[in-house]
Image (tube, rainbow, N blue to C red; front, side, top):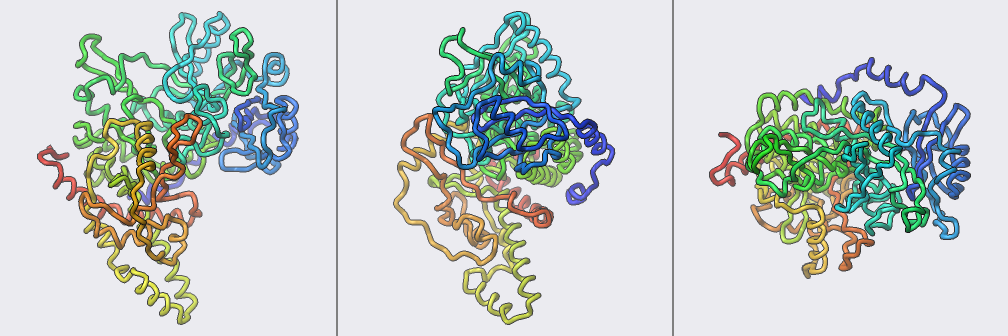
Amino acid sequence: MAVAVLNSPISGEYHRSKILEGKSSGRRRVFVQTDTGCVLGLELDRSDNVHTVKRRLQIALNVPTEESSLTFGDLVLKNDLSAVRNDSPLLLTRNLLQRSSSTPCLSPTGKDLQQKDPSALIEILGRSSRFSRPKQLVKDIVKAIKKGVDPIPVHSGLGGAYYFRNSQGESVAIVKPTDEEPFAPNNPKGFVGKALGQPGLKRSVRVGETGFREVAAYLLDYDHFANVPPTALVKITHTIFNVNDGVNGSKPHDRKQVSKIASFQQFIPHDFDASDHGTSSFPVAAVHRIGILDIRIFNTDRHAGNLLVRKLDGVGRFGQVELIPIDHGLCLPESLEDPYFEWIHWPQASIPFSEDELEYIKQLDPVKDSDMLRMELPMIREACLRVLVLCTVFLKEAAAYGLCLSEIGEMMSREFRSREEEPSELELVCIEARRLIAVEKEVSSHSEAGDEEDIQFDIDCDVAEVDSTPKVAYDFMTKMPFHVGFRGGNGRNLLSKVEECIEEEESEGEEEPVRRKEFATPLALNRPPTISKLSMSLKNIGLGEKNPFYRNAKPEGTSANRSANEQLPASVSFVKLADMNDEEWTLFLEKFQELLHPAFASRRSVSLGQRLGTSCQF
């Protein structure tokens, strides 16, 4: 059982070695980044605290620090810096103070860098043994830079990216600065307007935090199973980078050196991407392995453009090919939303997992994965790790049950019926698990009180449309005929979906949402009103039938103006995992697993009825 895995003790030897590595010396090196993208490397000793760090930043970068907070992932540092490990990136965020145009945030440049930042031209953040390849690439790139071989800007995509080259002029790495992401302060393509740490292209992925997600995907790809290129987080300095506040001049010879925190990924030579190539020639094993990774990390942006294709035989278009997955910056969101799996309706995804793949899935340990990421990427948020644990448990149970990749992906993908976004089957299981916990908590509190409130509570529940509570689990799992239409695998990328959301908001229907009473539990107060009595209504959802209970659950913040400077519409969040304490989280996982097998049985029966001649069982 996965419960046993989740409760298994962590290797003490692994933790001791890592802790000693981080605390063996009183001196530590950190990289502090302001919410506008400025970066400074600092050497800390035991006497340093938050106040001294802010003071050094104020002197070096000319930034106001009085009303600001120094954060380390989820942790807001008060004064003590003992929790900060060597090579950690910190973020300085403003609380109330608005940036003044008369005192712009200046990145350290030229002489300032040499005097105040002792770090090298390119510094890898972290000490993982899996960074050996990036370290070699860094050496090659530094040699090339000293010889005058400059990087080349990447003109495609929404964010800033740069090809760094070796001494022969060959592109060997792609670098994506965190402050040049979409909506970030120094985005070179017009997609600006937010500070680092605010909700970004996806509401559950903050601006400036896609870089460490790229690294997380690589670190989680054990044994190079899915073929993710070597990736690391770096502090890198060069004149090529974009700064929108006027630090860099408009002319090339006016540019100064600017330091950035960035993802650093090996560039893999390839022939085309999956959108330019017929998918029939893709190896089944390659599709499965990439899909397994996407499920684990809840990838919300696996479109054809970030699946590179390399021909192995060197001739023709339909010979043996290799797939290389890239661009994992929108994985591991802080809450569940709508993933995007390009492979979901490829024929390969309907073929059962091989024995080797099933064994690989069986050996996955989400608790150890989470602890590894905490050690290697200490800035990662706990909400992201909970998504990783949840999705890994879901994958392990689904594969053991016998579901194929497409069925698993469909259960994780949302429905769009009559322009309305509805929860995925995975989200429905989570909602039901949380509802059961809330009901148990209510019943337990009333039982302990021993009052007449017990009777009144039962009466209220009956009146408030929950008279089927005793059989809700049965109805939820055995009578929900989920629509299994084309989900996520329709060949559209993230932007096309965004445009559709904008168009849908412009032509919003006239019907008023159905108003329903909320069930008086803590869970009901924390979820959208359209989710109330979800389990009660599931059995009434027909195939392809519009469900009125989610009509309020629309992306917020849409606008008819499609300017790049406007926020893209946010996806609805039906399920949050971060608001549970440790005890609630453990209980939630137990309930979640109890509900999975009936859900899988329902999915299997519907899938077999709708495949029209195809099946996962060959």
